[in-house]
Image: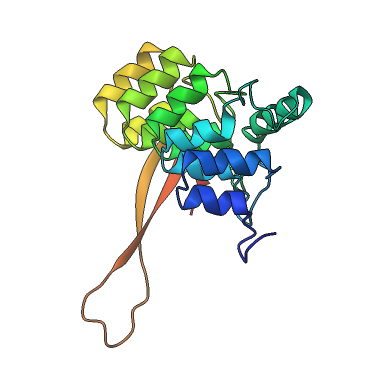
Length: 227
């Protein structure tokens, strides 16, 4: 059973922060943690989005062997399903770990790393960006340090035709992140510049307004632009 957004009962329970015990009961009643909604989100995506560590634990912690209502086989099946769900990606190609990084959800990022639930710390989304790109774009030094040091993220990961994490730090004029990335052998591969494009205005508008977008000029001088 799903709602108009393709969300299951488990999705709704996580979104509305139902108590831990309810999430566990739903899993015991065979609620599927791998079900995707119309945005490609599984329930764990929503937990990571809110940095709700207790909810993420409810969705991933193995059931205790003393539970009489579940056989060992059933417990194993639920456990396998819950951990398989962590690798499922949304419509932008982000799995749960990537979603946590995208939202700056430090507690969930740390938990997933501790549980060894990270499939690939340098995995790219549909645009070719990595979790390190996300946290650098947010000027999140503590999370960038965690990814580089604790998770051994590649400072030069991502699509080579797009900006590196260092390029993003340079664009943001964040000297601390710039130094951090260079200390991990981070390299620049593109020059990012901001282009301001005037848009047409109606007669009754008194002030001019503009739309901003980024264009990327690779160091090799071929031109690549993003809208």
